Amino acid sequence: MRIIDGDCHISPTREGGNSLLVEELIERMDAAGVDMALTWLQPPYIRSRIDESNRYVYEATRTYPKRILGFGWADPHLGIEHAKEMARLCIEEYGFYGVKLNGAQNYFAIDDPNLSLPIIEAIAKLGSRVAFHIGADSYNNTHPYRLAKVAKLFPELTIFAVHMGGASFDDMSELVIDVAKQHQNILLIGSAIRSIPILNAVKEMGAHRVIFGSDTPFELMHVEVARYRALFNGKVKEEEFDLIMGGNIIREFRLGSN
Image (cartoon, rainbow, N blue to C red; front, side, top):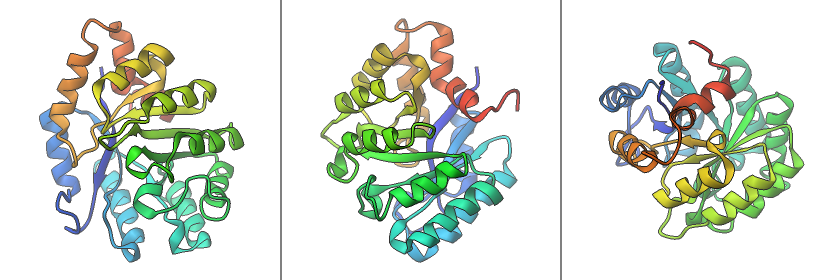
């Protein structure tokens, strides 16, 4: 079994209190027994440095091609055309597996017709994927019903729902699961969410729709791996656990034996 962490952040600077350089991420992966990590830039960040941070993720994929799976980041408040160009750069030139839009960090509704949808459309036309922060910490901007709207508008687009309605003491996971059951293009990344909602998602949707994520460095990777092992012990078949812990990303990204 290959373990792939579906939610990791790195930064070229020490802007945030938990800032993590790629070398430090690799150390945590080694300690946790994680083979690869889906990796994007780390908030909080200075908006003027978003290009630099995406570039840093790209350089990390070049330095550790068998460990780091790059994913871009676009902020519409820097300008729609800039965000669309950044998405194109990340996908076509950096070879990233998709682009993340964080309505909580960057203060916009993920289905905003002027801020978000033009960027999502550009990503879809490039045949790539999008990830959204879906958390109760930004109830209005990242609400599951907004996720449903995007999924319906772009049925051909694979969407990662990161945190699946958690990232807060509150919990919108039931709504997220209901939305994902109606839209097969949504995959759930179970990071920064309580254990019971993760288990419920697998019970209601199947192991092929749920992905392990640690939210490193905001959580401890080795602890999250241990939590998933304990959570699913005796609850799913071995092959289903393999899907959750890495197989679903291997399938979606067509990683094969890489």
